[in-house]
Every structure is written in structure tokens, then in C-alpha cells.
Image (cartoon, rainbow, N blue to C red; front, side):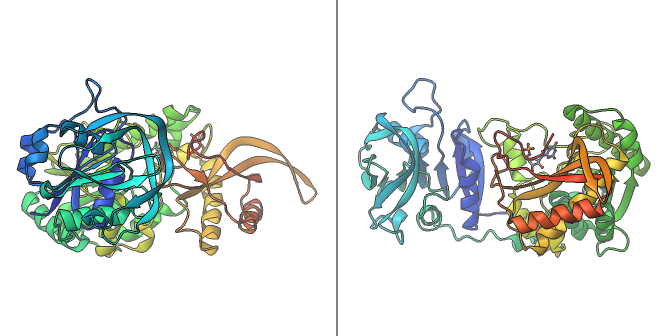
Length: 514
Ligand code: XMP
């Protein structure tokens, strides 16, 4: 597929995926590469533009991440952000020095509106700064196009070579006019048309999959989550019942979720594919008996999934392809794309099976961000409730039940969670809260119901707002809603006599309880 490409070259800054997402929002395809990428490779990719990201280093220090002077001499427009801006100046003969005061947070920005980068941008606005070095002298041929109170060069440019540098972070929301600036670069400086759309993605992917798979057989581990569901439907549209989806119901899903997945993907559903559901709840509860340590629970759940999947695959026999719902942040986070450190290791259930006989992996969503996967899902006609499903951890309720997992505890947490979700939806909050769920604490306490003394479990309600799931704030749910949820849970769920709301942010807490 020949498409317009903008390269984001990663110098290790924390907002780099955000830069890529902003470019995608201009409907231009973009990829993140480490700063170590060879110039030859860049030329081969023929990008319409290059963005150099921020990073934690000082560009004048020995061993600091760098780039060659030739990068700026290819006739490809380059925009440097923060560290990238300083590096551009440093490499091209400007001067970067340590500032007396570190500029961090919101700053008052004044721009020169005659710059293409700032066309249609307010002259005065707020930008987000985070730097201890500053550009004390621009490189030959550059002119300063923006300033803040503490920063004499908040932006500069050399128009005849299409080189632009911005000291602040246009990609974060705190920079009021940031999106316009990035879109000015992508559309007006690089001249991109912005024709990367999800309907063309679907069409092209279906063609590619058909060409690749031919008459071969394809196996998919379907979890019912957004990514694997979208991948499965895409494959089904492309190759119909050459696809077999194996859905392992580990008994740790939310209430009725197994049946919901079956209703969509099973024989009664609208898609042409072979669907195999394995009801493995008891097998999991047996394995988890007596286990209380969170990481050990995760490991057991992940491994059991692989074993069951392998057993099923063996029955099917040889397949040519295995489908995975990998998405772009997974690719970047696993260290294959950019420069950022590998942060999470626990986010995939168990990895790949060793004993499944297949030749190649297909990852049709590998290039997409989550919001794009959702658009593809809608484009494919997948029901809204599946497309907008909130993230659900691979180990499921196994890590929302503190301590030992039993069938009885699963029932309690499922029922409480279903009530909580229903009331959040009734209050119209279901699309605005990032993630919310009920968890079962391991605490039992004394209560009184009717005239009887009770000694039952406490349910903890969690709801967080987050952009990246790396940091999160507890959501401020109206008290009436919480109160209603509490009273319904106590009345309707046997075994619970106390309900608490968790107000901890992340950090120091995590989103899940284990
Ligand atoms: P934490 O609890 O680390 O969660 O703040 C951050 C996000 O990751 C999800 N999560 C997991 N997802 N396997 C997964 O597939 C896991 O073991 C796991 N643990 C946490 C969590 O739901 C949240 O969205």
C-alpha cells in the first residue's frame, strides 16, 4: 500500500507516541523509529516529513543521542521538538546551553504569525515547556519565530530548507494551539494530503490478507477484547471460514461475557468463520486453588491459556497462519519501534504457544493506535458495545479477587460488577470514565442486616480517568450514583455487607488491585 508517511524519530522522550497520534489525527500515516535508524533506511522509506522528538539528554554531552547533518540536507522537511529542536540547532552550528532556571510547566507564548507553522495560530497562547537546556544562539540562516518569558528561542525556522524547531511540546493538550502547529507542519510544510482513512485501511487490508493467505488455514485466539475481535472480523471478511477462532472462556470474565462473545462470533452471529468455545472455568479454578500471590496467579492463568489453545490447535491440525491482535503501542513498547524503555511486561497473557503448528503470524492491526482500531471496528460493523469495551486485563477477574480465587468469589465479583456497570451507564458516565470495575477485597467484616449479624466480604469500587493508563486519577462519581450502587450491591449480592470507593490515584496505586 503506497501511502504518505511521516517519520517520528524517537530520542527517548515521554510524549513520543502522542506525537505520532497527533500526526495520525491529521489523517497521515506515521511511524516511530529509534534515533539509531540509518540514513539509508530513512531514504528508502521516502517520508514526506520527519519529526525529531524530545528526550531526556543534553545534546552537547558526549554520547548523547544524535543524528547526522545529512539528515537535514535531504530536502525532506524536518521539525524538531524540544530535544529534537536543540539537536537540530546544535548539529547545524547553533548554540545550546544550560539555562539558569529550568522552565517547566505552562508558559506564556508569543508567536510570529507570518510563519507557516503558526498560520491560523493565536499570537498569544499557553504552551507546555519542559527543559533545562535552551537554544542561546540559532544556527546560521535560522530566524526566531516564537518566544516565551524565559525562553528567547521558543521556535525558529529556516524556510528555504524546510527546517523548523519548537522548544516546547505542541503534542500535549496543555499547549493550546499545539494541534494546529503540528497540522500546519504535516499538511502545509510537508504537503501531505491527509488521505489515511479507516475505510481505505479496511479495503487494502482485506486485499493484502487474501493475497497472503491464499487457500491457507488461519487460527485466531479470540478473547472478546477490542483488538482480537477487530482482527477476527477483518480476517473473516477477507477469507471467511478458512478462519477458525478459538475462544477460551476461563471463567474469569465479566458476567455473561462468554455468552456475549459467542452471540457475536458463534454460529448464530453474523460472521462467516469457525468458532470454538472452550468452557474451561473449572479447570482454571482447580489450578488456582490455594494460590494467593498475584504474579503466580497471572502466570498460572497465562500458562493454562497456552495449554488449552495448544490442545485445540492440535485437534485442528496444521494451519498456515496464526492471527494476533497486536497494535502499534504494543510494537513500540516491546522495543521494536522507538526508543522508550520497555515499561510493562505483564500485559500479554503468556505470549505465544510453542506447540502450535503454523508457519507465519498475521498481525493486521500492527500499524494502528487504539482509537484507530475502534474506527476500523465500526467500519466493519462490529456492535458498539464491543468496539467501545473498556480495557479488561488478560487474567480477568483473577486479579480483581484479592487472594485465593474460588467459583463463589467469582460469582460475587461478577454480580457486583454488573450492577456497578449498569448504574454507571444509567448515569450516562460509561463513555467518560477511562476504566471502572468492582473488585473483591479479601476483607470480611461484621455487619447487620435485618436483625441478623453478618460477617461478609467488602467490595471495592474503582473508577479512574486516564489517557495512557500509566498515570490515573480516581474519577469523581456523584455521590448519589455511588450510594445507589452500594445499596443495590448489598441488597442483591449475597455474601457482601460493605462497599467502598477507592480514591487512590496511580501512582502510588495501580489501576487493578493486584
Ligand atoms: P495497572 O494495574 O498496572 O493497570 O495500573 C494498567 C492497565 O493494564 C491493565 N492490566 C493488565 N492487562 N494483563 C493485561 O492484559 C495484566 O496482567 C494486566 N494487569 C493490568 C489494567 O486493566 C489497566 O488497563
